[in-house]
Length: 92
Image (cartoon, rainbow, N blue to C red; front, side):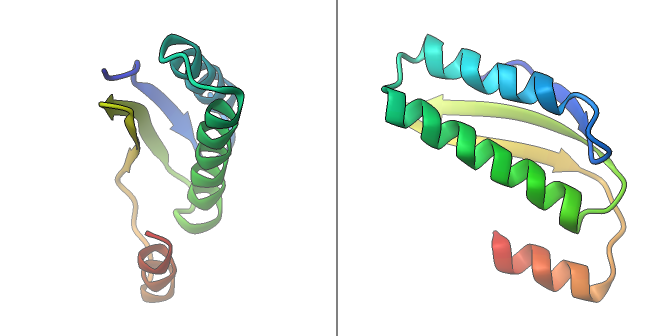
């Protein structure tokens, strides 16, 4: 299963839509309360890293799952310096 794609901006645009989509996925996949919370927290953390590391950029967000294994995706093109690159790699 793949969720809808949402273009989100590091300035905060559409972050609410990303969280709504995350909730939709949790309901659709019938996740437990803890599972839904875990998915939400991971999404919030990912968006926070985007804002703090990637600088001003837009990105495409989506969720995929296969057999109960969820993958959060955030695809962006951005220019970062060496220090930001190290920080990004250390979080991945």
